[in-house]
Image (tube, rainbow, N blue to C red; front, side, top):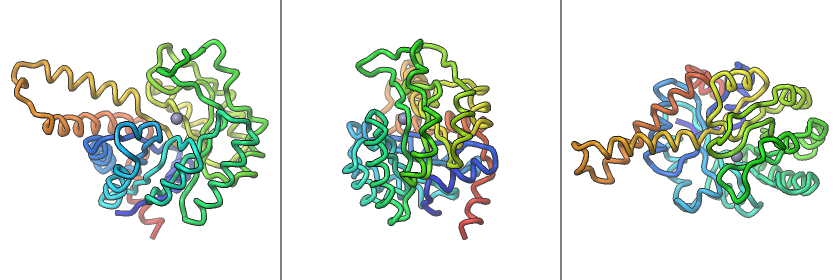
Length: 295
Ligand SMILES: [Zn+2]
């Protein structure tokens, strides 16, 4: 129906005590699955695509697909660039029509992170696009270095720099680190809710959790109560869908299945995964309300 800024959805979530689900999608089956679940629940949703995922499909190819899917959905949908790693990639996403972007310079110094985020905000806001940035940096499972769970607290967001960073950059959503990691967890995550509370006291902008797949339902609920308004969700969904497709392929009656059929399995399995998450994140029925507010 309409392509919306992700921060409009995150602010609605903040106000009505839920979290908007932000699902990474790399195939048309995944796009259709996320939209189907969002429509079935009348929930706003964010379709997102990370710069690192461009090895699956180029940004310029997937962008018009995401935008068309958002515009034809019966619920408000944002199309968000996840983890834009450079100013240049973010500019490309703006040109392609994304309604929201993340600039991730969290591995750089805070001064450098602040400078590039402020530059992105200036251009994005001129184009009516929202901006997410990250103060962390968050670690990643499956990368070159093993995640150091014992030393994770050293990489948590420092509450002392949050207010200045938000004010100096003008960002719309802030990704924060308080115990989650990217990828499939190899240890049970232990989130630091005291740290989340200290961060939330420093700013009114919606907070974002990355590495949001693989947490318990209790962790989601406590995080939402603590100020998280956008939950990034990918790895566990991708793994569960793959496992289910593998099981089905191994069944004797499916030995003649074509790859085109797999896309339909993928769509339906992704829809199941997303619906199960929306049941915990909340936001069911908020879609029509958000559309009404935007008119
Ligand atoms: Zn992330």
